[in-house]
Length: 200
Image 1: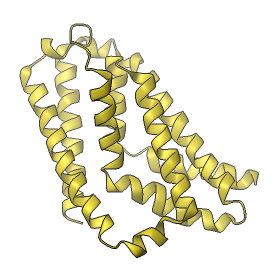
Image 2: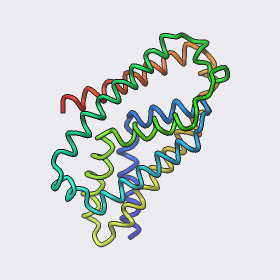
Image 3: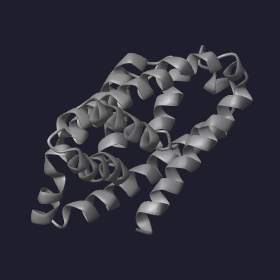
Image 4: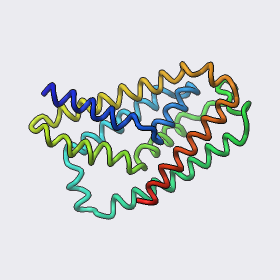
């Protein structure tokens, strides 16, 4: 049981460390110190639900609904292209508009809606959490539940560290140019992920 728990944690952590749309968003919110706790909670809870579904058997569902994965891929790509374009527009506005101290905080509802879309509209999230972790959990039968619990714990600890640790970068992002660069990097990340989805 302990082995399954540890392996679930380490496997999930290795998957989530890659720079992705969700991570870039959490980092940006953490630097801005905007609704960080809520964003971390939504990301971690979403991952926990997806991991639980994967451990319970997502492959069966996609067997019944073969159109589900392609539909999610196209919708996710469209959303990532749109969100990436928003980040490029924000960068184009220039430095002062991007200062965290001067910028008007985005409404919580808007931030959470974006966070949920970046999580649930990204097929890569399903691939990592439901398909990959779900299939790996079968190797630890009958201890799939501890494996899933360890994977969910990794997600929570990573997002908490990323979101709340991002404030350590605040001195760097006191410079307007750093915000411009961050927005461009986030925009590029979104577009690269969208391109990989469109190319299958």
